Length: 145
Image (cartoon, rainbow, N blue to C red; front, side, top):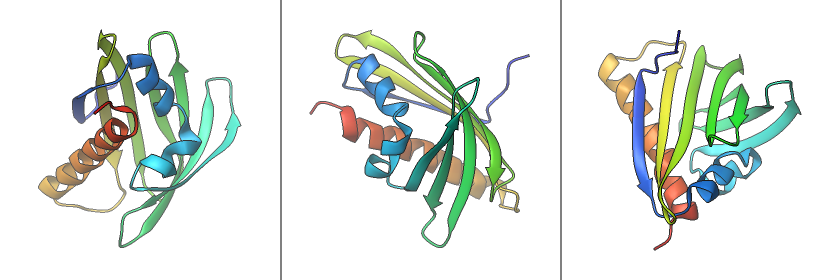
């Protein structure tokens, strides 16, 4: 049975699909171009893929969590699952498709349970803002003007 993400967002990025995907799997570069990522450190590679520890700056508070990734280079598809940290759960998926040689369609799907109560509309706003932020940061990093 396929996992159902509770939020999904796509964005057209003016860069080749392979370029977009390579930036998304360069985890340790995230602090250089993702505005909310304060630190990213590869802890190890396990049989499925890299295990990455993140520190996220939420302005009022920094949170830490560890994600285990599965990377499919051929399909340009990335999934992750929560392993440890300050929140209850996070899982997600990112994939990129080539629209033409210089334009891609990037999709980010996310399921987050912070482990503390947030009103439904505020929780959805936070998730959508996070996904939109990642995709727009990625567009600024790799997109052609």
